[in-house]
Amino acid sequence: MSGKASVDQLARRFGVQPETIEGWRVDALEGMREAMRRGTGRSEREAELERENKLLRETVTEGAIAQALLKRALEDERKGRPTPPARSSR
Image (cartoon, one colour):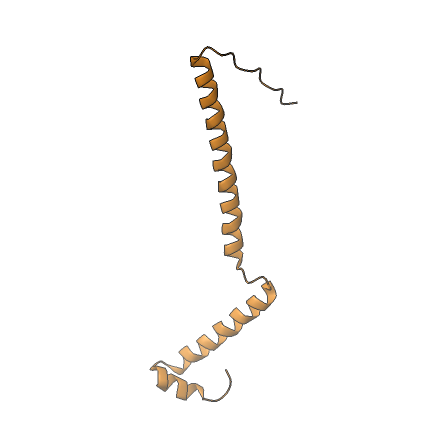
C-alpha cells in the first residue's frame, strides 16, 4: 500500500498470485473506509449483539424478580400469612 514493493514482488514474497495481493489490497481499503464511516470502532454485528445481550439481561432479570416474588408468596402462604393484595395495572 505504501508503494515500496510491487504487486509481483509481494506475490513472490508471500507465495501467492498477484491477483490475491490485489484482492487483499481492495479488502484492506474497504475495511478502512468502513471503519472511518463508523467512527465508533464497532461493527454493525457488534452493535446487534450488544442490543441482543441487553435484551437477554433484562429478560433474565425480570424472570429472576418474578421467581423471587412467587417464592416469597409461597413461603408466606405456607406460614399462614396473608398475601398483600395485587396492584392494579392501570
